[in-house]
Image 1: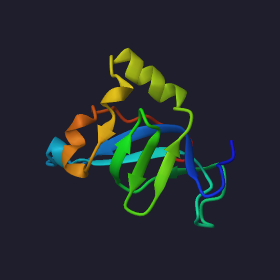
Image 2: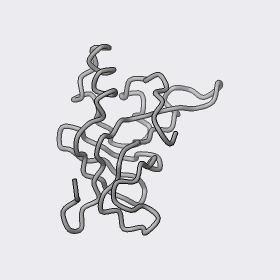
Image 3: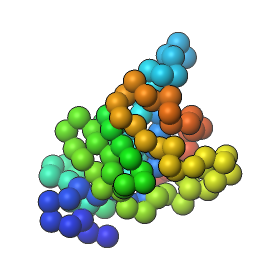
Image 4: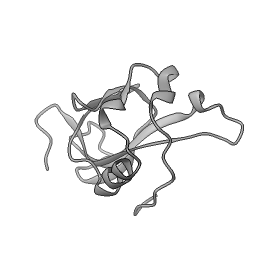
Length: 117
């Protein structure tokens, strides 16, 4: 699905988080993975699977997330991620993040494999 003019969009997206074995959960890095459309960088053509940089703000109910340099519109969620959150009783309305210190608001997710990871 092409992005609207001026919009950078993530399709088939999921949220990931991680840190080292001695990283406190509230300090974990949080990023998104998905197919990007409309990205201003020529390194990211439409349909390319990307890992964003660390998320600094997001609101899934409103359908957006921001990294330091890019604001993404959220398209369709990855079906495997949707299955995982459903099986674990996680509500997407919990996926709100005002800044990275509130990272603990996002439930931990086991690593999920996908092509290109």
